[in-house]
Image (tube, rainbow over all chains, first blue to last red; front, side):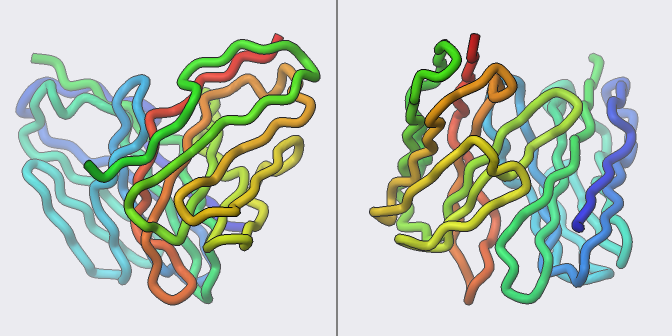
Length: 111
Length: 115
């Protein structure tokens, strides 16, 4: 059974204080790992897809990396508008269509 | 505008009264899926569909039904709702490569309360 564990569950940062969110996964062959952002009361919004170990993707203050067992979402010099819940999800290889999400990390950036 | 729409956005109902939550997408996506989101449990997949007339169970399908008669629509049916189905529901869609979906686009959510 595919499993996704995210840590920490909650993170409070001062504006400008860089940090990383972790996503550990267990899957029988990874087809893709996805990062989403979710604002309160809204649907998740896609950020990144990573397909293979060593791959990195960047968008503004966010950078996602992937190893064979985990992914990190690095947040550089965060701003209050980066406050949200960040979700990680995995999809197994082999033509398998089910997607498994982690519980998420709730990030609060304080001015 | 490319979007996934869900209706209703909020629903309060009573145990046993059949209900349908509609989902529609205008992106011509093959893959559509339903999730429920509960505190401490995260997003859990209920059902997904790779194309018209092709559906499959996710992790928590009990008590739910779906159908995919048209590519753009993927309704979620609760034939006899119970209080443990009180949750926030999201519909999502995605383009596909071969038999696998890419990133998903989510609807705004439907908050369901069953009393």
